[in-house]
Image (cartoon, rainbow, N blue to C red; front, side, top):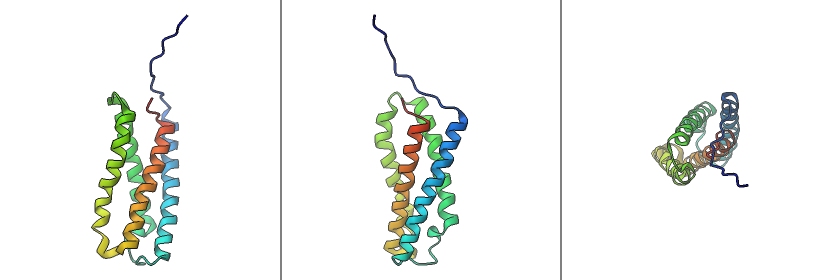
Length: 137
């Protein structure tokens, strides 16, 4: 006897998803803090606002929540969300670099480099979390 199985999208409860998103914000903010402190120790200007905790924690939270909304939409509308994620996430991360390059005059190479690494850390943390709490298949 053969049992046919179709790919079924796993649905987690809203508390699991919200908890995962909150955890991603905390973990990504901690990684950002380490990167900011390293950048400041390596010579980034002390007055470079994007390396101040209120700035990057707020933007990390906005990015993770916006990413979660986008991920949820992508799961619902895409016929092949895995393939879409493989090119969409790196593309969005690279596009998110653009505003950072505009801050070169204020933060120098060290400050801007830290911001670029922060984007990668946030995206990596967020995607890992989304895959756990909002699986694509």
